Image (cartoon, rainbow, N blue to C red):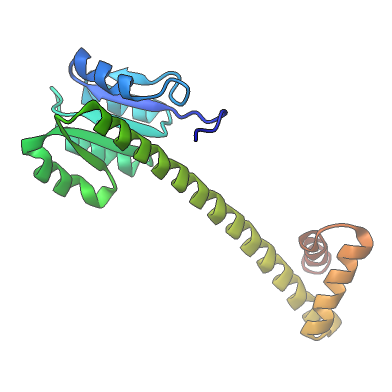
Length: 194
């Protein structure tokens, strides 16, 4: 089930207009409202340098460069990347791109197959975003713990408290002042160390 507010930026790269039509036809308009389309690898590289894209779709072959090389470059820049290659080129392209996390798909296949692949691609993007949110929350919590531990050390060093008393002191100050423990810790650090 698609979320209403969900939308992603997409770069579509194909040397031919039929390839562009094919790729943009696979992308739900509600989720990809304005995909950027480029006919060359050079144009795609310029777009990747000037804009941020959530996803990149590349239809091989490209007239000016190796599509697999572009796909690896796009993936390394942080974009979720899908590469469409001829069936006879699939093994070589997949071998070149797999380590970079590029989704390589052979063609031709039935249209329903490609729609399913795009749906899986979107699921991977959602999973990636959820993981990034969890990592960010954990990093914030870790920073808070570091600040609190540093404040405890300051209390131990300057006020000769033991760790339990320092912990209780920070907790009580946070409750009494109705602020977070990290705000109390910052106050302690700035009072004694600056």
